[in-house]
Structures are given as structure tokens and as C-alpha cells.
Image (tube, rainbow, N blue to C red; front, side, top):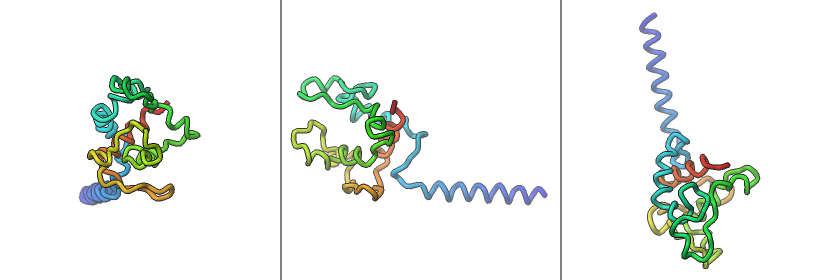
Length: 141
């Protein structure tokens, strides 16, 4: 019986490793939201504030206050607007508003190489961007 339980344990381990390999880069999970917070602290906090409510120290000279990021799901009928945020962070939404103060992170590394997402097609994202999105989703009110 002992060898049978070892075989079951080994099989479970192989299955877990296999399942872990199936997870795409676009969903890193809330366990990595700490990584997303560090990305937020480096890339977003200066404008969107420490708590994601806007009014960060660099926002004073922008002319337009950056939006708060804690109510995005509420403003979107309870759905976290992941694809919209990818468009904004990568710089695609800035094409619609040439006066927007949001930097084009697609040119600065955070979203480098991200294709413009379509409404129903998931986009594979760089790990830092995916982690940032997970963090932003985790701070929704």
C-alpha cells in the first residue's frame, strides 16, 4: 500500500506542475499582487497617489487631475475593465485623446510589445503589466 500512496502523491505533483504551466501570463493571480504594488509604486503612484485615489505629487502640474483607480469596477457595472486599462497603459487610448497626460507605457517598457486588445480577444501581457492589473483589481472598492 505504501508504494501506491507514493504513486498517487507523485501523480498529484505532476498534475499540479502541468496545470501551473497552463496558466497564461495575462493572469498571474492575487498572490503576486505584491509585485503589482511595487510596479504601481514605481510607475503610477506619482500621479495616481499612494492609495490609488488620484492627486499624487506629480499630478499638480498636469492641469487635469488623474483619475482615482479604486472605483474602476464600480464605474463599470461591477466588472473590472481590464482591456480598457491595457489600452490606456499601452498608449492606445491616448490616440483618442491627444491632450491626455497619461504616458505611453508601450514606449517605455511596462507594456512594450502589447498589441491593441480587441473586446473579445484576451491579450497575453508582460508579467509586470499583468501583476499591475491584478493589484489594481485587488484595490477596488
